[in-house]
Length: 156
Image (cartoon, rainbow, N blue to C red; front, side, top):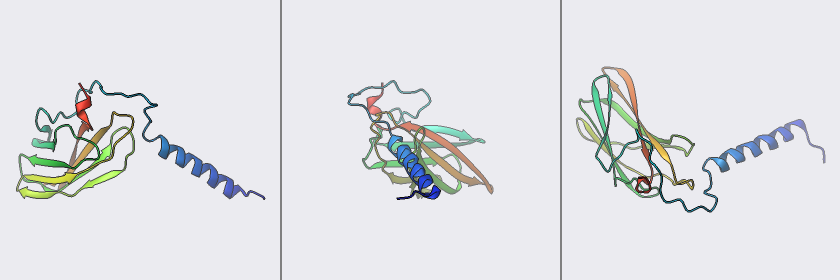
């Protein structure tokens, strides 16, 4: 059988693609890791809402349950110090691609929103997620990022 240049290139690209997909979440190599030192700067929902301020507007994010377990139903709440327009949230892995999870926000009041959330688990045992909040204020698009640890009861 004769291989054409195109089929060889496709095989190489397919192999590289599969290697990236498989290595996206590193295996734990049989180690049973139960505790991590949590980075400073990550949201700690056990202490309360996580706050960011953008151009004088305070945004507060809370996820319950506080330990943000993987593959379990969560409730995300967002509030702002002033009314916002076109508020959207998506959740993504910070250090590895785990897909983009759009969050279907429901507006509760003029300044508060909530939504259900669920995301997958990573076998490495230490997965930092980003909740990326975008919105418009006075016709100007703005955004902020909240970073948090999945399965945070493992951190100390």
